Image 1 (cartoon, rainbow, N blue to C red):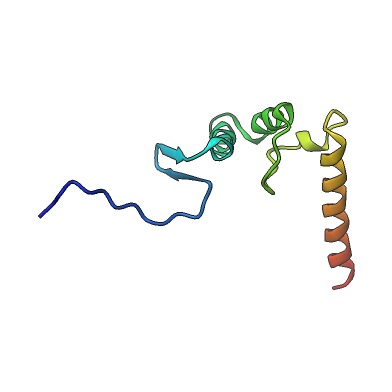
Image 2: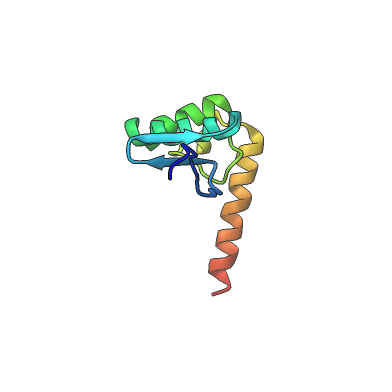
Length: 94
């Protein structure tokens, strides 16, 4: 017997893509979704330029190379350089 109740699986991701259907909940999750959508449709570099213009970097995901630009905010360059140094340190200890 079906009572019209929909059951959704627990999802930990900020957004979900199922074929042509994209969904998210909340403002920042919606921004994450749209950046992924732009990257899928127009490419990583375009999504990176949108991400840079919005100064939206809450996730570890960086689209394209715009975050390396001289136009990127100081906090972003500092975080990028710190991450690169950590990678170099790990590579040096192997």
